[in-house]
Image 1 (cartoon, rainbow, N blue to C red):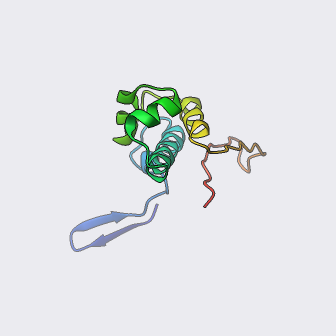
Image 2: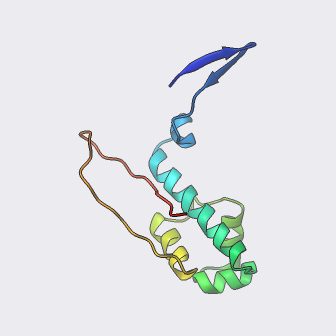
Length: 112
């Protein structure tokens, strides 16, 4: 990470993953879950669904939809979030390829 000092403030360039920058465990998974949650929220807005309608369509309770709308995804698995997106009309592709390093990593690529 690059560091610069600007008028008594130290600026640190992000790695691209705020969870890794905060040294949180399982940062890759947290980034994926947050990205899936953002897409769920976009889909709910695009489809103009109420939380109750979204809950029925996704197969979860309205309070769980409310949690997702607020960005609370810790009680959801990646698989459940992907299932919610499927039920909202999204296709999900999982791509596996050899890593350049000894240990691979997880990432979420969104189509525009």
